[in-house]
Length: 444
Image (cartoon, rainbow, N blue to C red; front, side):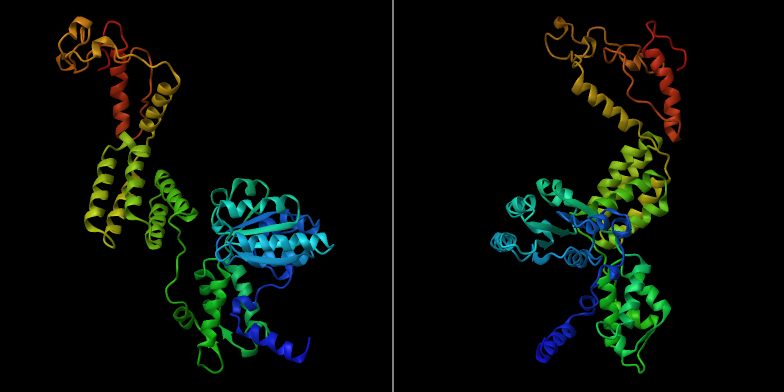
């Protein structure tokens, strides 16, 4: 490389942000994802055996998907080609695949094709990859922040190994930050900055496992510092990050995962966890109506008659949120969430309707017993409709001993918790009377 070319390369590198300059150059520099990249783990074994086929990298931003794809190409001695599904179309994709086929046909190196945000490709674009993936012309590495089981064609998913990336730990982030502070060529070492330990720890925690965010904030803090010598304390680091951004896609995994954690925490009677997940959803911009609907559903699904007040409170909360709106309605949501979490739990009504619906779908449809049929229209009595029906309010206890179904079935089984325990006690006597051929009143 000539002196001019070297200078040009250095200028281009210096223009890059710190996160790009500090991208690991070797597999040993890569941090995190040891659950599939550690010694003896699947991806490590594939690399060592040089058996990289089609893989999909799935996880949040800033956890190393693009970096690892580049390292895979280097480790397997493959040509590295990259496309972004956001800016590339079928024409670009076909050109790259044709180039890869030509390289193989002329005895060249196989190609590792990295496609960033692969879920942005439509079905026809994803289908265009299949022949060359199957024939081994390219080793495909697709990166996506969306769940590939929903966002990527099943034909492509079935031909790929899927590796789910986790957010980097605080320890991982600190390791990357310290490396950037010490590296004099790619990092900030030539500026000889110092950063307080509490500032480093705060940045690592606030970065939410995103190395790119952490390195960008560190660079901003140091580049904008007018102290000599350069020293970054906690207050300066906090000022450099400003408001923490919270990742949230209302149609993606985060939406469903947060809702799932919220509902399961209420069902598990943990108000503290439930209110935390509620706060996460609200701070992320979740639709208040969605949260209200989930609370109303849970009041019947998981509490039911163990606390009949739960549904009334959930519905009242929904109406109050509609009337008040944000930000004040978060108080109502916290109120309802705490009550439902602490309420006694029963899914007896949920199981009952499920079992009855299954019988309707799979068993012989039961005719309405004649004595229960409508007997108000002219001629109904001649058909026998309503004949023999006993009016319940004429019974001393308000329960008329007659058959209401035509077969012996038990769907509703109250649990011995909350108000439903009292219902269970009363229902035992009612069922005994209804199913007694003589209408025995004992137990009521």
